[in-house]
Length: 458
Image (tube, rainbow, N blue to C red; front, side):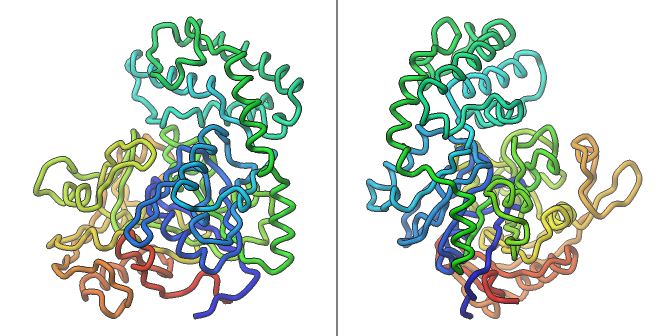
């Protein structure tokens, strides 16, 4: 099936992140001329396996692994320039040309060392005070978004003006150092070796931050651009664009399991605001969902299983699926597929189609349980509620389905899937009302079943 020109596709996670978006973005990039990140920061982790070689990306769009494809970091991303430069250097070491193909929005808010310190100190304070930790990655994402919303953020464009940057930095440092030292007790926190060069008596030092930022500014300058203008010009010229979401819908700051969420909007609609294109340019929304569910960090998880005891279905998912966070290395909690959760994701994203990933992980389980709704305080409901407290009280309503013993690893033809696997997938479509466009049967780029090409004209 040949993809048409001039269509734009948004890829979003429909669960709590880690759904396998990176592989699918890389696969779809064969039909795209540009790939765009529009939210989040280097708390994202997208793993690609190409020819058996694994590559982990955190900031740079997954399309970078396709020669000739332009990659864009939109204004909705909070940017650690140091981490971006590290990622570029890592790709260049394995022969991937990056700098001429990467464009960074001048409107991106910067993540600076005091944001990381605030993030870590707050989690430490919650733990010390007996509160449940949010489960952040400790990389400064939330505090950087807070500065953006408070209109005090230092942005990429400020790096071009050293005096302006210095004045804004002094002002924001005064505020954040006061919070760190007097409210969060930063003098008594072990921030680890990464932050030590910036700290003195628990406070982040101006000179260390400023000098590093000016060094970064020179290296970043050739990649800085008006990304909104370039995307609109590319579309007008007939290019296909792929908008790559990070994290997942249930981590969205508005529509997720608040407060156990990330600090950005992960839903498809934010591709417009986070990249500077009109919503009319978003033609197809592909929702990525695992064939089961996982979650990293705290927060409610209705279908969670015991994933630590050998011999249990949850342990099977955890071990066979290699469920470790790409960014943090933390173990992911595992559970049965939740179709009621997916109905919420379909609603807030306006999903056009689904890509089911990690179907092969379920190989060998004799029986599967598929959650189609919940009992909540004596009521039957068929969609995930909005409040975290309500979600924590949800009792899943399951349908039992037969598993399969045959291997699905590497299958690229739907008809070659085991009968039980096809029935499982068909039941997901029946319950959620969203058609399946693609199925992933291993992490490898080529192990993909195509049902409907998202870039094909309707």
